Length: 412
Image 1 (cartoon, rainbow, N blue to C red):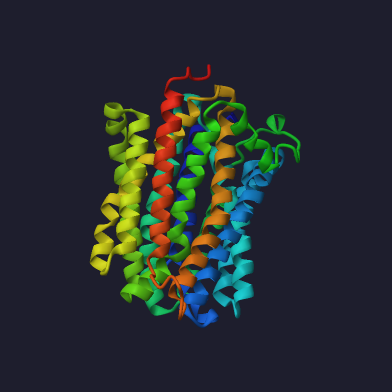
Image 2: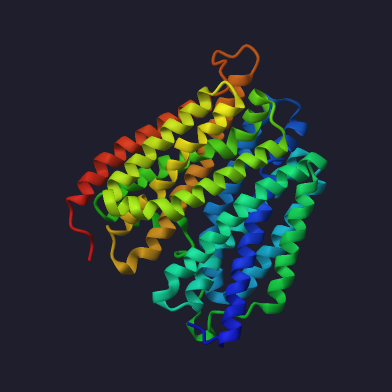
């Protein structure tokens, strides 16, 4: 760990927190308006459905490729330049999308955003550099709190700005990322000492290399499949929610922003308050399965809801979904040794990124097909019903695999 003085360490911690809030806030701001801007270029809601799916897949695909590369670059050149380049890159990207004259320019913007936002892995590495092992859980919790705060406020602010202009949120997002860059340029010290740096290696920067771990331990491949299905179902929201809400309930940007803020608040309550006591009483496996079933019920109710009010009420059972991710992670970490925990997290990120590529393409196509004139599947909520079936399958598989895993001794 780099020897930072008390004041410089506090400044670094403050920067990590503020930057995480600003970055997630900037990303959240554009969520309520980007699909509408795509629809403006595409000319129809149905056409925008599959195009938005492609854009989300582009973003996730870039994260899949770029995350391990950026992590390895930060091991060689230090955390500070990578984090600063990321923030200024995001600022430039939002300006590009604010000025985008066509869909091709928006697509380029999503590619750049996927690359620059991959530096979140460097933010976690920076926290590990400046925090002793016994304090890292609290440090990571600080980053998690920043992410949640940014996601609650971002869509809400984006919804309000979207009522002014569909491009206004992009300008505000650019300003926030630019502010984070200037703030870091002044206060952020380097955290990785030169003698602890490691030369860049394509072997370590290969996302498929980390995923080999999932095949080397019993039950891990099954739990990794549950992880894939969970992320696959989750992307129904990023792929079609904004378009679906406008098509079926005639919701505008501010209404979408309010609902997304509610999602963030419910997620903070479930993961920050409810998970601990529930696991203590029922254990990881039962809590995970209950969360997956709750999510399946909630998503199914969303797909069936005839009114916006009933769709909003469906957010309550859907929030139980938040019980599944931390307990699934817990079950997986129990299957590997301490020296493999970092590689496991990298493998999980790769699995999530693959789901992030495949799922938006699938759900975007389903939604586009379901709202097209003369479709053989003329039901706009079909994508949500399919996502519910995916979660139900994840719950069943999780019950089988986790039960077997609990009968096996954890790795030493």
